[in-house]
Length: 506
Image 1 (spheres, rainbow, N blue to C red):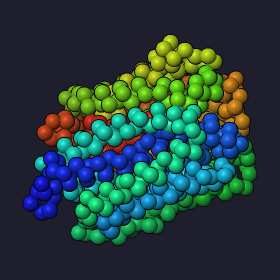
Image 2 (image 1 turned 30 degrees about the vertical axis):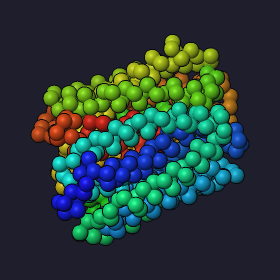
Image 3 (image 1 turned 90 degrees about the vertical axis):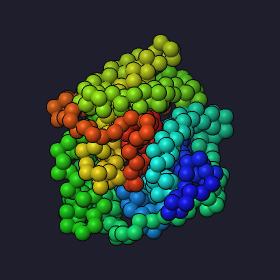
Image 4 (image 1 turned 30 degrees about the horizontal axis):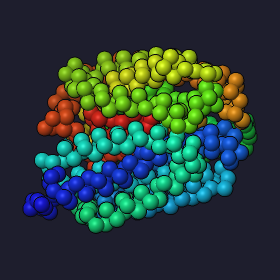
């Protein structure tokens, strides 16, 4: 039955269950898509005759636009209506998925992926915002917990689904399957989800969003293309200059605008800045791991796409099983120890992945590294997320979550652009098992070093008092709800049940 308090609904009501289903399916579209694409990369490259840079852009184009527009997507939802923007995002995402599935060339696929990222930036913040705005206060924590847990299950399905589609049908169905799912989501939303919007109606910072995407695009292009065109080429140098100038312009406008998308005052908290510095470092450390690992398993070790997808499932399972307990432990002892030890455990997992080579055995060579890495993530991610949220004022909880998510995505963006270049992977190397194996080994060593650096930053800068008074348990208090969160990768807005960071995917 419908609750009579200001038109809000209860968790146990039929409408409440429909709203929750719509939110889970919508955010699940972005989450599943992110994981299945990684598994399909070798098949895409072979079918479209793409070089390694083409595979990089297939991943980074989506991440770039999602990271650049996700805060704007939340603002648009608050201003023009959460249901409206969510539906627009779903339709946009489906149309872009159709373009991806029909792409005749790698260039078309990359453009469609960038288009798809914009759609995700519209639908992702709205999924949780609809729950926050439509459920009675007493049921919000329960609804968000269900949304987070079931969203994690959806993410876990991604690698399996992607591997099966690539192996049994075609890589194109990795994208085409989104279209009928999107139709179902739209019908559920229009039938059962009420419209809500914020009363303030602050203007949307389109200037900041534009400068942000230009900065990320310019820098990413320069990092990816310098391996083939050279640092001195006009295109690479011009893109680098554009990225730096746009980035400077972004900072200037955010400092001067009355309603910026990113109020710089939020960084006046030393702990918030420190938490995001750790986030950028550690997510940079493992940002390219999943991108490279599924290619290594298929190209070098001879795994089928389905087997490669299933191989990384232990990471998701460990995250879902242990993240809540990790958050509770951080609440009792403070976050510094876990934020310092977790990256070291992840680094150990990456070094164990050096065993993954030609004719690798899953139980002996693959599982140990994957399991240790997943355990390290479970130790680290929940306290890291909680610290980033707790260090910001309560009125900026949504903004803090969005910033932390954007920082994580930007770090992954840079990692996928830089790490293969450092390791010497380029051109058609992903079709040469020996060359790719050498590059993979180098990448794991470099990424492990970056993770250890992140552990050092956490040990030196994170205070154990930052979580004082912040509730991390999953009991009555539940995870702390926010309105401008971002998912489809790591839902960093949920204190105790984050899903794997881009194990997620881009």
